[in-house]
Image (tube, rainbow, N blue to C red; front, side, top):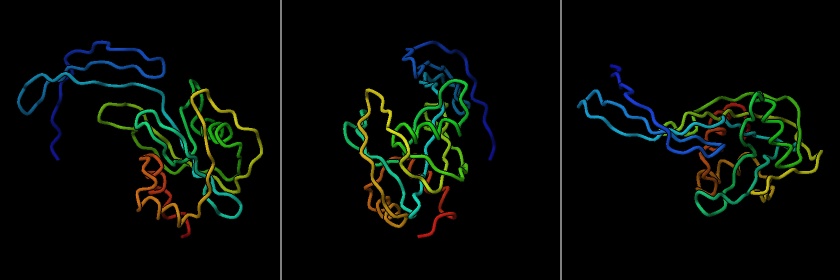
Length: 181
């Protein structure tokens, strides 16, 4: 594939939302030389966790998502704090959202959250022997219901579109060769 050089001509602030910073980027399209005004969102990276219990069930959370105004079923996870490593964030998010902790942590992979207009990434992890060990520590905007499914059921729910969160689906893509189902 031949790479074409998109020229960034100008960057201007749009809005700073604390956890997200939105800018306008003006690029020159190499195909037609027209200048296009785009939106670029910068924010912290994120993590999520496939937590397998001792009986090989997958820990999932059901929570309300404001963007769609409805509930999703997804993996526990969240934002990486400033100066926090991805693995530390994954362990913290699992503990805060579910009260669970586990052993044998393994990184599965990293993808862009949404490269259409965001520069942040999400890193997926898997952990074994997860069990409830702590009280949950939910944010003011969280109300989490914990679910457990077999690995086979998770893939069935993805196929049936009961699980639609893209970061959960990508985590299970990365884990497909590690999971028995």
